[in-house]
Length: 180
Image (tube, rainbow, N blue to C red; front, top):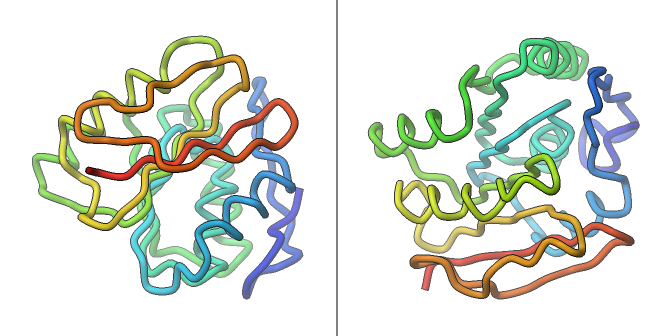
């Protein structure tokens, strides 16, 4: 797998073992085509895995990327991938997503884009959306993007988050939420 666009285009992304399901090129390209210019925006990647989405965001000009990943093997691959691109500033939070969200909320941090790709078939997408709605870390004009399996139905509205767009790539759906 490689970074598909931006200043680090073509760099190989090392994948951790252990059944990680990386976002495929077509879905990553579609995501960043929909987002458009993200230069200068802050980005949070939850359930980061290899960090492929956050790396793509950095390559596309995001000013700040925070990776949340509790698995130590995955965190090591994220660090290796960042170093291979000459990047060392982005933060990697070594916590469970729900603990990390609470801490980020307590610190009053805000993100323009929050991306999550939780393990499929565990209701984690819906639970994470509920936590995001409660912790208030999404910037006023920001997006929450959920990558999920096509048969996993997410609500049109959850708390103050409203579904505004969906894009399908094979068995994968990207659902875009905004605060309304």
